[in-house]
Amino acid sequence: MPFGESIVALSTPAGESAIAVVRVSGHLCHRLVTKVFRNSSPCPRKAVLAEYIDLGGKSVDQVVYIFFAENASYTGEEMLEINCHGNPYIIQNIMEDLLARGCRMAEPGEFTKIAFLNGRMDLSQAEAVLDLIHARSEKALEVARKQLEGSVGKKVNQLIDKLLGIIAALEAYIDFPEEDLPPEDASGPLQDVVLLMIEMERLISTSHYSTILHEGVKTVIAGAPNAGKSSLLNAMTGEDRVIVSREPGTTRDFVEEPIMLGSYIIRLIDTAGFQEPGSEIERMGIDKAMEQLDRADFVLVTLDGALPCPIHLRNLQDKLKPGRALIVENKIDLPNRLDHRQSFPEIPHCEVSAVNGDGIDELKKVLLKTLEANLDVPGEDRIVVSARHAGALKNARNGLCDALKKLRNVEAIELVASDLRSSLHFLGEITGKIDNERMLDKLFNQFCIGK
Image 1: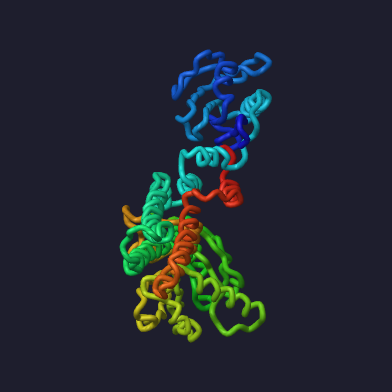
Image 2 (image 1 turned 90 degrees about the vertical axis):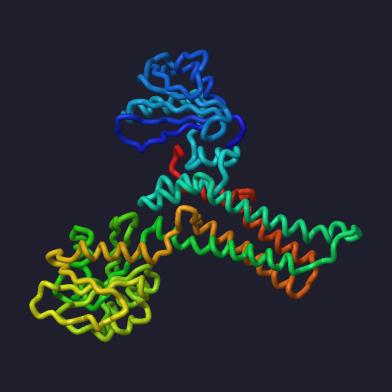
């Protein structure tokens, strides 16, 4: 934001509501309080009931406003929050009046971007604001709150301090070759670099859990045609989301529906049945089902309780991992049920009737228990990094790997130091110490206007 500008935005959803919040940030805030509310001495952080008087001297609405002083606000600038009645006509009048008084409309995420640029938070905390807004589960909220408190930034700063220590020790020999320094010993830096790489690997490994938290556990329902996969999805969601038919091959493309299970979002994906394809369209459906299976976090293999396990399902054995799959024996309401305990014996079995709902609650309990036991859920003291953080950490790790090779090959210390400084650059990208305007614009454009 150019120096001297003040921005304004509606920070609550558009439409009718009991209360709407209009936010202003910039040097005009103090003057707005004195002119709009006719208050000669605004009191910071105090909720004040007042009449909003527009430029024409007309009362627009009775509002509650809060003034925030510079260096004591969300953005670090003077801020003004106006709580008015949530009538769209009132909101429009207030916004138009503030624009007429010299404010301009805020861009998406601009309030948080200003807070970052003013040092009120690092870049990982700014991202946590977005995660907090879009969190769809309890665990996602927990992770976002922890990151907003600065957990990622603190950990990255620790890595930076350790890396700076290694660089300083190496560069001492470069900058002061004639000083009375101890003989160069690569064993010390070698061990330090390896330990730093291990720490980075641990952080990188948590990015998969971050994806699961924000996008949900990708759970593919696989099985033969007419085994009841679509009926199972409908039973688990409690809605008729998928067309169910006795005709085999009704599902040609995958259908996805999310449900909440405990603290997790479960993305149930109904796929085409596995069988010998009878047409090109069927083959394409099966190929798509296989693609979904390869990318799945969890698999529910649905067996028809009245029929033997098809050979095409047995061929999926290598894709089913204990702890990441359940065998769902469907149609337990039929009298001619078969014993499927020998089908995939290493995977837990659940018995259900997708048609009348028998066993569905127990299936959900077993699924939740299995997820909690096998998803490597980080504890309270563990940090979860995003895909962007993981990308920067991988680049930093690669720099350390290059430095490690040079140390082992006893190459020039100058080259080792160059690789280490490259790693330092990528670590700085996580907290925003590296000024990359394109990256910042891309990040903050994901925010809603008013935040």
